[in-house]
Length: 392
Ligand SMILES: Cc1cc2nc3c(=O)[nH]c(=O)nc-3n(C[C@H](O)[C@H](O)[C@H](O)COP(=O)(O)OP(=O)(O)OC[C@H]3O[C@@H](n4cnc5c(N)ncnc54)[C@H](O)[C@@H]3O)c2cc1C
Image (cartoon, rainbow, N blue to C red; front, top):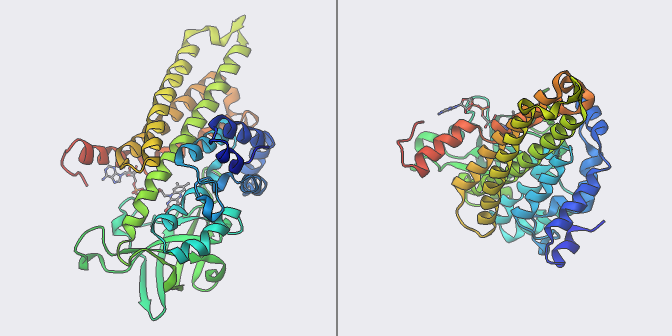
């Protein structure tokens, strides 16, 4: 198989990357994912294969052992994973969480963590932002980190911290100054790298949440958990800014996953519409079956344009908040449209586990809610792009 490093040297041939991902995914068919889903098991074999192939290190610069590719290429990897019927949600964060260290970490921090993340020796795929009470209102989060000599003491709780049980490190956003003492709303939060191998049982507790999909998501509790001061990323109190550009990368990459999901649903629906004969003819001969699939196809193609635009802007270092958000919103809605069309095309068989549709249907629904819900994207566009009054 062609390795991503080789591909980078060969002029970053996108089609070669896509082919290599498809070849890897062929070893993980629907049967594999059905069992994992049923038993709520982590897809360790799949994640190990992706790690060994180097795909998860696509965004890490070559000097730290990665492939030094952009979001455009990393997105293509995730799109192909989803298009092959696999689920990148188990490990996609290993690709992008490290971006906060890469862009805002000190040279020592980069040298300490990035090569091991690139090789897969260290997993940094837990991102602890959401809290039960503050929800989407990130600036109201209440987990605190208080400086005490050469370390910080963390107290509080996070929810929906995905993959925490399958990660060595966690990127944590915590409050280092009370909300009513900060000059700017976005100040007072700080980002830390938590070494969970040391913290577990020493102030850190992780509890799995059984959810609608197999996403290894958890709630985490901090009870006087100590984090060395050297694990603070960037400036104390300026952490929100450190995670915001990473959030654009996350949204663009997840938008690629939506495009992949959408293409999987459309292929599945089209194949079945051609094969299934009822009333003496293929159901796909009926416009009532054809049109929703065709409409979903058009929506996915249109969303793909926005996703590609957002990725290109991110890779060019241009501000791309509106594009990243629109890509995620339109992508997730187009994927859902395709899911609906696929479900309806399959009739009763869509409910049978062995068709994988009900599983993918549940999985793709997530992306209208996480990592950011559609309403919040609309509010962002209304305020920051259209100049309407802030609504929240
Ligand atoms: C499976 C899963 C995995 C996740 N993984 C992670 C993770 O790894 N790390 C992490 O930090 N978080 C994670 N999340 C959390 C996710 O980012 C949040 O669930 C999401 O951002 C929405 O926040 P909330 O659930 O608190 O909803 P709330 O903020 O309570 O909002 C509920 C609803 O109200 C709407 N709403 C709220 N305020 C407004 C407003 N002003 N105007 C209009 N509508 C509004 C929202 O759009 C939403 O539809 C995950 C969630 C899930 C379900």
